Structure formats: C-alpha cells, structure tokens
Image 1 (cartoon, rainbow, N blue to C red):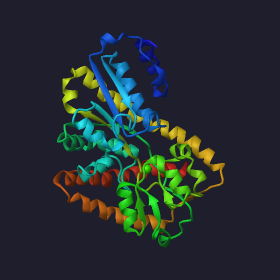
Image 2 (image 1 turned 45 degrees about the vertical axis):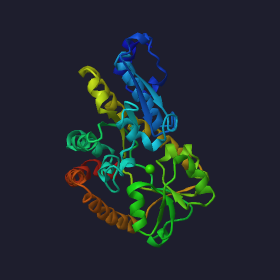
Image 3 (image 1 turned 90 degrees about the horizontal axis):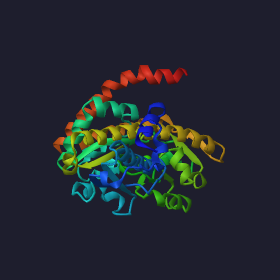
Image 4 (image 1 turned 60 degrees about the horizontal axis):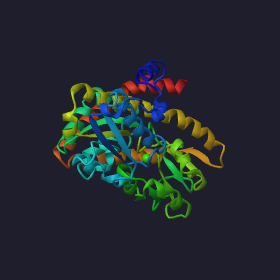
Length: 357
Ligand code: CA
C-alpha cells in the first residue's frame, strides 16, 4: 500500500492491526536511520508483541521510511529482562517493555506500569499526559540516557487462576502463586508465596501443581496459554494490575540525532499504539471471555474481606518503597495525589454510570 493511501485509510479507521503486513513500496535509499527495537515479548505475541510490531511499522510508514526499524522478540538478540540496559547503552535505539521490570534501577519505575489498587488505564493516561507523570518518568529514565513513552496498555487484568476456591484470608496462607512485582510483595505479606515465572512456564507449573495459582493478563492472553485447562477458578478483579502501561524506551542519544519532525513522528506513533493496544485488548478480552464461559470453569469475584486486606497492605507497601530514594518519593507523591483527586470524578462519572448500565 502506498503511504498516501495508507494515511487516507487512517482517516476512516484507525485500527492498526491491519498495518502489520504493509510493506512500503519506497526504496531503501530513503532510509536515514536504521534502528533496532528489542522487546520483552515473544515475537508477535498477541497484544504485546503485535503492539511492538505495529509501533515499528507505524514509525516506518509515517516517516516515509526515513526511519526503518527491525523488531526483535525476546531472546532473539537479548533476554527479555535486559531490554532496559541494552537500550540505555545504545545496543538498540528502541525497546518495548514494562516499567515494573526495572524496579532494581529504582523502585519508582513500578509506578509507570501498574500499582496494586492504583490507577486504571484511562486514569494512567491522564496522569502521564496531563498530570505530570510523564515528566517525572522522563526525569527518572533520563539518568539512564533513556526517554520513556507510554506505548500500550492491557487494560484491567484478571485476578488469576486458582486450583481451589478462595473463600477467606486463610485460603491465601501458603498459597503458591505466580505473581510478579508489587502484587507478589502484597500477597506474601498476606501469607501467600509469590513465585516468579516467565509466561511460557506458567501452564506446566500450574498443571503439575508446582504452583497453586497464577495471574497472567486477562481472557485474551490467558486463553492463548490454555490456562483454563490447568485450573478451575478464574477470579476477578485484577487488584494488582488495574491498567498496566506498556512502555517504549528510546535511547536519548539516538533520539537527539533525529530532526524534529521525526522526533514528533516517534512520539505520535507511541501515542497511537498506546490507544490501539488498549482497544485491541478490550475487544479481544470480550471475545475470549465468551469462549472461556463455555468451558468447565468457575468465574468468581474475590471476597470483599480479602480485597480490603490486600488494599490495606498495598498502601503500606507503596509508602515503604517511597522512602527508598528521592525520585521515588517524588513519583509516589505525584501518583498518590493524582489518584486521590481523580477518584471522586471517576466515582461519579464512569463508576456510577457502569453501575446503572
Ligand atoms: Ca499480569
């Protein structure tokens, strides 16, 4: 498809799934910047991996091939959790990943993906774009020669798959659950045993009883892993990941070599993928949920007693990590204030509406 007709097609439908296979007819000689993108996802993994490919393709197309990006799935060039360091050092110009993987750099990173009982996807975007969040994110990553951009969101996740019914807090005691990051820390303080496993290892661990429970993403991605064949109880809500932002990491030196119009194209493409991935997840989760309902599983809401306890612990954990360094403190204060101030609006807008729909 020619660039002009592609741009024209954007006007009528901005669903980017269709651009995966578009190969521009423009000659290679137009390319001024040959870039690499490393990701934390298997190549073309539904939602996340496709989002990375779409981002690269969109930059190629919008820049009229002046920037040409080659995308690498996890382990093709580097392991999934080395994306941050690799882009920071200039091994690749771009990365596509999740900020909570980098809590070892600073605990503050975690606020830029998802916080237990924190902001949902819509509120995250509001905080990042219009609430000072992105500025703080840039300050945090700037120290590593990186520029961050929101570049995807899974929307609210599910609470996870359990091989037994969870009726009260006592059912969490000793429960071995694959749940990484802050959610895992909260579970451990409630008596559970968090386990960290790569996505590809989850199904077997759950089926063989190595773990009692797991969270992954939501119906769309959980169905792809066949988790409904390994555990019967599927719980909601995803208290630990209410709307995780996916990030694009940009090497700052590389970004600064771009002329201003190409910088704008990279920024705008990230924004486009941010909304596109959320739309994709919402549509596909809906379809996958219908499929899962036809299977022999029980879809249940966590008891309120458990949610109250986990919320209480989450607030404590957030407060504790905020004391780790000054930038984390600054991020914590900004995030918390935003949540405190946006919540009354969400209550009387979205929540009240959904309750009566
Ligand atoms: Ca998850």
